[in-house]
Length: 471
Ligand code: AMP
Figure 1 (cartoon, protein in one colour):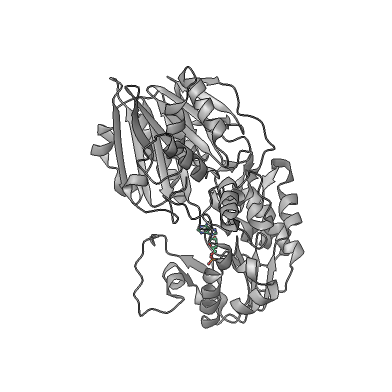
Figure 2 (spheres, rainbow, N blue to C red):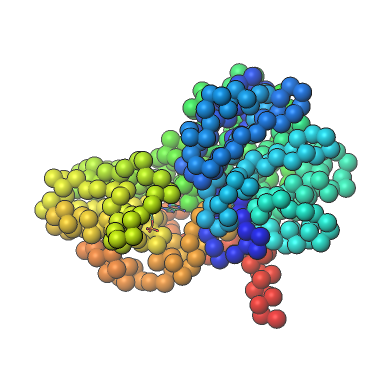
């Protein structure tokens, strides 16, 4: 979900994770654990909404990390056998509790809640139209449009109203809508963002990634399919009419960076996909070296793959401080690389006098890698060879991954040689587009828009704005 009263379409998109539980006496606790496992998908705010036995909603949301927002007392207060939970990180919209999800409204004397992962590309158009028709928006989040579309639908029952609303949404949405005791779980027709289905005894669990099922001991049933709309009540799952079909377009960046390596995404283990990227990278960009290491944690698997294929020994040469939050305050007198220094530190004994290969999963702005290289040189590395386990990121994501504007993307504005010079490394090699696709060929088709600029779902709002600017 994206935020912004007047959304800045060139700005980064936000990232989210969601979980829903149906048919469990411990719904809130299960949702809490699920969110805890999905914390990497959003660290700004989190929330859980339940529906108690009388049909009344119970909600608790807060800014910050899941473990700091909920405690025994708040979870006990979240009574009910249905729960919807959400974690969110946004740089695009205002960072306040009003935008925290799940959204909760009263609809025909019942609670209606919504949790959304992804970005609608026609959010502004929907918002403009709905506002003209009389909708009053409570938040500046695009996800709210779905609620208004449901509420204003002329179709007969809830199933049809949800279908009506989702059919008008363009772009990326893995979404959970709960009305009273019923959960609707759906993915957009192209299936940009993941959503999986699990079972724990009688209970049904819906979650962004399988790691949320693992933590509660739920069995993975299957992925929610692109365009699929499921109706879940008291632990029963019913398949409703799917959304109009489109060519699937699963986000490849989930495998490169975003998802947890212990999850299965797009039917494949994220760890094994990253290892394959690393192996292919070693074939495409070999180098004589004494050690190879990762920028932990997202490139651990790729660095292992590189080591396996190249025969260069794998080392733990960069140590990450896991307690650095997104909101860390940087003293103004600190240097440009201080942010990186707070998060990573090299093991001097491992790199001193060594020819080092550093593997990272992606280069976005290039600031992290530049800082790391400075630190490795200071620690006495004899040579630094940088390897990136994905192609140069050249385009913003409009489908739910937080990416900076084109101006800030180093790969959009510089050649590989220019980037090599900027980073101050002895050599630089990116995984090729062909190599990346070949490594996971059985699991596509994929969205690779951040590398190729091929946007599968129409960028409705962006086009509208361009048209308005040109007239
Ligand atoms: P930079 O090149 O300094 O912008 O940062 C690149 C690093 O950030 C890589 O090591 C990635 O692991 C990580 N990264 C890539 N995409 C994202 C994202 N959307 N949000 C946060 N971190 C990211």
